[in-house]
Image (cartoon, rainbow, N blue to C red):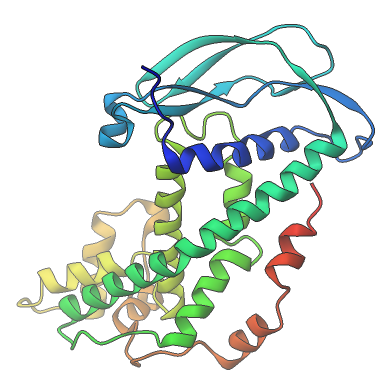
Length: 286
């Protein structure tokens, strides 16, 4: 019996494959040049490392090889993925550089459209968790920290800002080792969840170790505790590069004190004037 492919991965692995291929092109390679291409991914039965997602399904695995070459010789490489290491062979196929660049532009737009649907849910979840954490540790009412326009601005930051989630994800997913320990969907969702959490924190004026600082405050609430004592307690268990001072500690304790918080007016104006998604990604050069 032929196993079915995981439905989401079956739809979007071709897009990731196109991004990998285009990433290997030199910027000055002429469009009419011809190269020989093999697939960046192969499909094999899922393993226990995939959990229920991979049960009785084919899952994609990244092949550790250069996707593009100058000759049609047979290629050999190694597949690495969750619970799997395999040796594979493939016959390359000819393709023009113009086609590779066109496919990469389409792939970016395909992924942008899909992940734009994920972003609001990721931001809402991060906002809910951060609001509840601050309310619990600071003994405040659990009220929203950001209003609707501010949440939309956070979503825009993730998807459109230079060095935002989407732009940085595009640079990471082409690495051969990116999916060695997780399938692409899980990897992307995990990155988006982490980036949404950090973006919400920035929007309310929080610092990266804010939740840990507030948790420490709650643990020692019944003890004599001033700001310096809190700083000393945190730094005792932190590495030298992660230690905090009075400014970061104070920002953690004051995060979200205005509720609901709005994004500064200049940020909302900047977002409204930003390039459209079509301008940013369909028109981007490979």
